[in-house]
Length: 350
Ligand SMILES: *Cc1c(COP(=O)(O)O)cnc(C)c1O
Figure: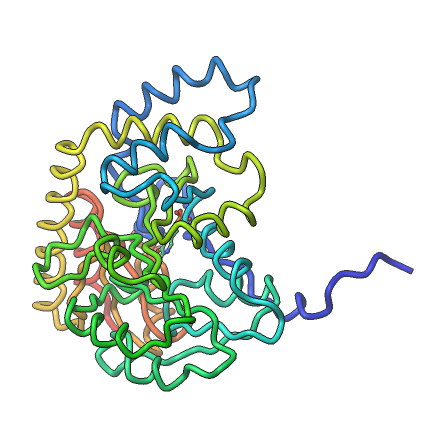
């Protein structure tokens, strides 16, 4: 007899990471091409001599720096091993087996995996025809068993943004005992003046969490650090279900150093934003349908042509992220990288 694992895990799709192909450029994982901020690298080097010690379990320095940045109490913050760990902790902190998690689909591919692993029920709500979150349908999906909703804005992988007014009207109608997680992994790339700011929303609403990360704009995807801002009771529940010492010392040091370089971060995001506009305009001019995007990627809803486009890009040494026969997500890279993608898009026969 062999050791028994949970039967339901057999059906669980594995998380598909963007591929790294030697000799090719990688525009598959929404990383920033420029690398971490120099101050973060220096901080990691310095912290390296102390890795024989356990990290600060309470993540106090980083929590303090975030509290100051956002003008919230440290008790309102939970730091995690990437915001994806916090997504899982949020489900753990709110759901047991009979409870439901509502999320848009297609959206961040970790949502279904996490929900199933924790043992709660998935309720997937299709996007609108314009590739945006369907808030009306999400409201209609709420039942007495709903405990948590993921609201991803800008949405990964489609890039679409919810406007502040529509999000407010939605939140007014969500029962107050349902936790709404605003997944703002791409917040730093948003330049739409009507965009909501999740942290501001948490000041007025007890059932909202803002989830952000150092993985994307800050260029620390490999360090694994993200954070949640919410009411103290929620943040405390998140800390309770976290694995002890899961935020490592190098990640903490890198994140603290990164927060001290806001000007450099803004400049980098501005570069991505202007390249995003260029890539969007050129792809549109080539005849591609490209939804408006506020993230550091574009979505190409290519349908059945998705696998062929993927192969064509690979042949041109550009790695993109294809989702079945739905579409392809392409990260905005440096101008040279984007030129390579645009050249591949131009020569795509399909
Ligand atoms: C990348 C991403 C995250 C999580 O990133 P971490 O590296 O775990 O911080 C969370 N949500 C969305 C929508 C993402 O795209």
